[in-house]
Image (cartoon, rainbow, N blue to C red; front, side, top):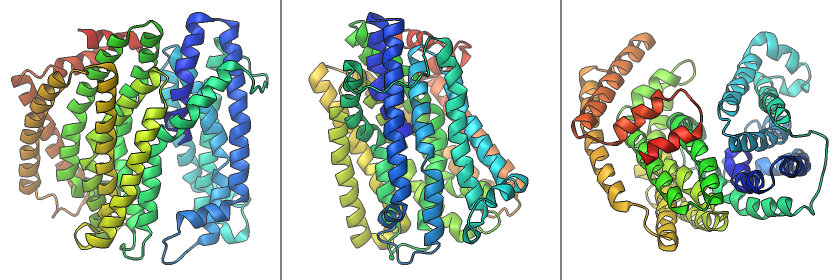
Length: 488
């Protein structure tokens, strides 16, 4: 929740206003106070999490039939939780750099995070780390937990020089009386919930997955299915959202509200052009995708079936998950963090109700996929409510143009699905047992399906295709380039 965007949602609009009205030292003095105030808050939260680690794990496993490796879970939680200090401050640094339209450096820091995790997974690295752990907890999992901590510190450290170079001082300065800090704090509370509702829903799904009625491995299947879906959501939808939010904030600061709506409409069409066929592809090819990625070692065919089932229901909600990433920044650019939080609370309540109903009444049909389906349906409700409310308050959002585009996209996605299904049957993907052959056949089907999708999109003259190609040809990271595509 800390890194999901709530910090940027509250900080970017306010800092953008400072850059426009009070540039230079006043703006950086404000940023310095926010940075260190948040450092104190996150450090306190991390300390509380470490102290009450046993109670936190107890909440997380409230429906668990048994609590295997309970002590290890508590210990790992204590090792990992301090990382929220680094990750949270890294999110602040990212938000500040985005206001200067610097996207490359913040986007590269997760790579370093992953490299830290990989390094700690190697025996030559994790064995010294394990020597620090109590004898009862000397497992490779401890090394991975330390890798998370190191990765968070690297994410922050990589961005600090860029902030200093632009005028920020790292001298500690804590202030709760600064008007700008108070404004960020007022916005941050609702934004923290509004942007983090996806993570909260994922937490709810996990709690229900611990139910004794769920098959063994349900928790892991939900996690892995979510990771696969995030390949699309994180690499594309969130990337577009990241570029659009600072631009919307600058447009609002300049009094260009209509331009904000056009920016949103353009972003939604472009993201839908990718996420709708991606959802169709994940639904159809879910089993071979899971086989190629995970079915090795102790990950058996039964594990694949469980994970593929969860991926099916998560994939159904992929377009909605992506759309939420775009519409909430539009509210935040107007400094309205209350509405997304309120709608998010309703969506969370709906998720709990649906999880309960599915578990009690439809378990035989849905099995471990019921939490994923509940989250997907809640996401469609969340986006629909936010869309209708914004339209009612601020006027039309180009729904007819959007509906026309979505219709063409759906036709192209249907044709792509036909190609994927034919390739799935003709390629005998399910029968192949060798990893390299599986990967080759899967890649062939994916390439053929993508070619069919883009080919039909060109025949139907989908305007998103040339817009997407123009975006991909831009070599400059400047957000104005993206904005110009939207205007054209």
